[in-house]
Length: 182
Image 1 (tube, rainbow, N blue to C red):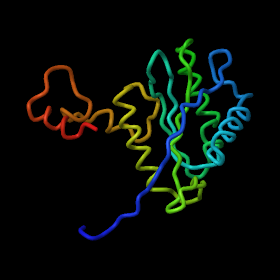
Image 2: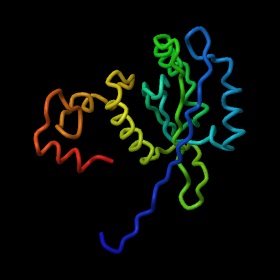
Image 3: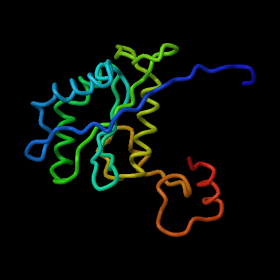
Image 4: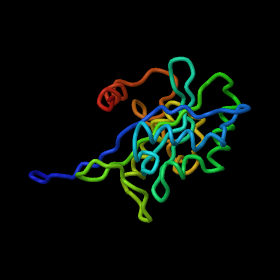
């Protein structure tokens, strides 16, 4: 639409923040210390809404294992839910030397650039970002723990774009890959 300006929806990325470990899992007793440390560096971030990725840092890279969103709760209230800690623990038990980390993508308020707070209403932008992050993380790790919203993403195959199979790509698929490469 010529002449129409769309309001930009902004998120800021923070992390990776290393999660405390104990006996191969996440040390729940260090939750307050974890968030206090983040609050001191980034005031207001623990109370924000947005998306997050739980990953393992090993060697020089990261492997994503879970993507989540916060809308009704803050990062503090959502990322350390008991069932999330079970997910994280299941992964960390298999990575004795890897470091469990969280990346936080905080939604910013329109115009003011402050952290958006949780709300009873859904943020369409948070849901959209979560789906995009799930797709990107599935490309890096097909064992991603997310089940909801992944049924089709795991099965879709578009040569040059999504879930490439072994073997040479056609000329068209290579061109598509170049077109969509970021």
